[in-house]
Length: 346
View (cartoon, rainbow, N blue to C red):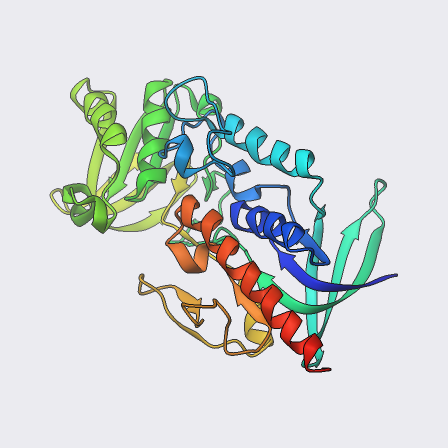
């Protein structure tokens, strides 16, 4: 059983976690990143071949270091960029290792228990002692559900990967954001008979600051509609999903039933705050009525529990550039706090 003592343990190896690790290395801290999935795991869950909404300067770890083939990078180009950032700097990251429990043994001692599996599937346990914790976790642990009959059928998915298994099949996409719009677009363009169910308020929203779908998604989407390959249904609710159909209540047609082979429910997702809340970190409602976020000091990003910090999803409304920039501010502050405690003899 490993029992390593660290200045800073970082949970999560997304853009925020990688940035924090790089900052910790530059500050000379003893650090480690624990990631239950893979490096940049949230990016890896994007659809295969997806072009990112953002330009390289909003995504890259160092200025002019991300050089995509076109104006904006693909999922694969961005993943490679983040992986090579880790490799070139030899950052300390344990991927495939999950934090399962955290105890606070004292003001300068968090005991972090993890589990992982070896090459033949045997479970391994490790324990780390850390003076500070930084949660740099994403928001895709719990996909939101419709909670309607039939949502547990095998044909219902809460993540879209690629359109090719659904050529010439009846596909329904439920959701109003860019992820849902992209999925509907990809399915329609690649030969699925596609219906997109979206609330009227989302469909009519044109304000980027209010979460409207990006114009470079809407424009080709509207072309698919004009060409008769994509149907948009302004719905009030999904009533039932069966093996062969979906029943919806719509704005214009009342109750309708449409033939269906596959359903993608893409209505958002939420972070797993279990570990934070068990540590006593306070939470508050997020921007969405159905989400909660940790309470933290906007200057230091420290929570109400001394020594526990948050970054990434909680501090930047899911935008990647602030997720990279924020840890560059947080980690030096953490280093200063560690120096003060050493100087005071604690």
